Amino acid sequence: MPASRRTVMNQRSQIGSVPRTLVALLVLALTLVVAGGSSFPQGNSLTPKLFALTPQQQSDLFNNFNTGGTVDGPRRSTVFTLNRPATITELVTYHWNSGRGAKPGTISLRNQRGKIYGPFAATGSSGQGGAANVNWIAQASVTLPAGTYTLLDSSPKTWSHNSESGFAGFAKVRGYFKSTRPEQPAVPATLLPYGSNGYRYLIVPNNQTLPANFGDVGFDDSRWNVGQAAFSNNASDCQKPLPIASVWDSNSRLLTRTRVSIPSGASNLTIFFAVDNNIEKVFFNGVEIRATYNPSGCPRVDSYSILVPQNLLKTGENLITVQAFDFGYYTFFDMRVSAMAPR
Ligand SMILES: [Ca+2]
Image (cartoon, rainbow, N blue to C red; front, side, top):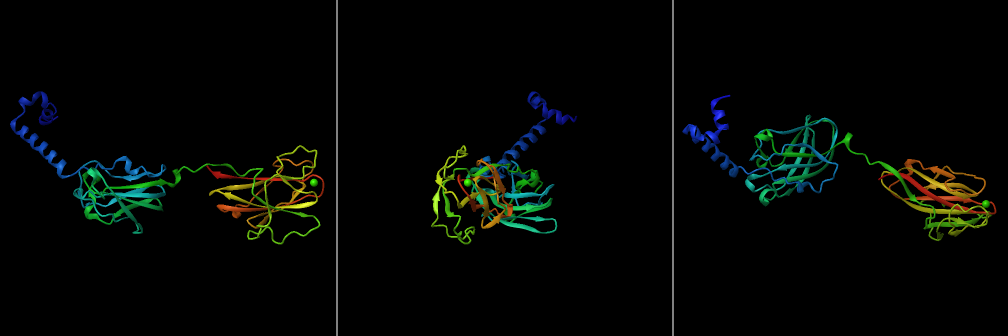
């Protein structure tokens, strides 16, 4: 180990033996450090609260911020590499500019073939000492393939950098990798329980004609009855599978039109029935889907179900139209709707 290094390490105990020239050098060095601390403000203004509003799943995919003093006008490009496809949600750059900040402009990304993503408009956020517009924050929504990208800032003259950033402009690239984004697990959800209220319904004796196109979405059901399931004449010795709320006469058809709200991302939407005598037709959003169910014996909960084709589902209000048929004695109708939906 060189003698001078050892001397510095032991300066407290051996200060009396240190040559005057070395003491003078140490004083000079300390003076420069102190002076540097004031003339090159620290780039440590990125407090955690700055990102308090960002979604939980995003993280820094690239971040060369550091707490060293900064100067403006990067000498090197800010370059980062994505090993996997990623969705970019936020871009941040730092413009200390001697505490003056800079009027927020735009931040863009450029791939290796020169394709530009953006520009994304930035908003300003204050930093150290309340300096306005030193942090530029741009919201983005772009999915990038794996590759190397250059971050472009519309005001390079005020963009901060230092040796610790490799003389590249301070930047944060936030988002999430496609393969690691936690998928929302789908769970069974009841969209319409048995015993629901708000059915539009019409009872048509078997010797009468049904209204034309009653399964269509645009059919006017405003003059139909409004009632609650289950529908029954309560005529049987059967154990009632569900509470009876509305009357359905024997030897007639029960037509029901029911609006069901479907959440985004729902799948495997299934309609379950309890019925006497049978289900003749089911329309989903005006499209007739498989039905014709002829049970025997007493009506039972979930004794029949129909899986609705996925392409008929839409987020928001959907219409289910059912044609149930009774040919004597006991009547019963109720249904429920379930789906797999994001939690
Ligand atoms: Ca019957």
